[in-house]
Picture 1 (spheres, rainbow, N blue to C red):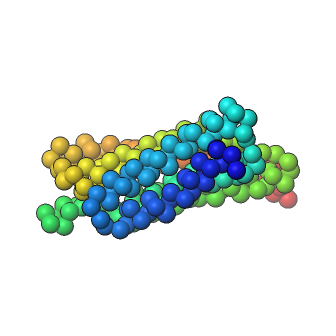
Picture 2: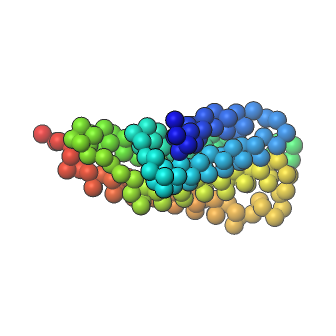
Picture 3: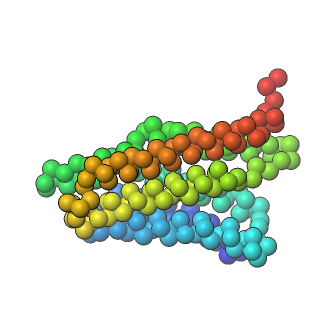
Length: 202
């Protein structure tokens, strides 16, 4: 297995580690979750670049790289939707992070749709390549998730409240989340429009 494929596999294996850090409460567990997610996101930037520059593109990479991205992004948003808010029961703090079931459903639906398109076009010998909208969607969504994890890190691990827990912060998080959703819908529409001709409606 070459280096890009090892990085892709590492990204997949980091997902359960990330989820453990999100859910199992130990000192600075959100810090650990942030570091794990950041490491996984870095592998996403590296594996494709190394594969292309060293001519190491493989069938496994074409299959596993987008799959790893989907698993990581969905796992992070699903965990955030489940947790729901930055909170501290000792002082009655509850600060919603604007990630909910609607967000997760839209993103999951887009990913299932694109995966279905890839299956349909593969039967016709056509490869659905990652487009600029898909790459932008993935990059922006990962940045959004890093920002939310930074909020958990600063507020719950470092216990810094006053400079962070403001309406402005809430609106920034809200905007980032829903821009991610908008990019998800747009990129899905671009894929569907580009490959609709391969879907037999008869």
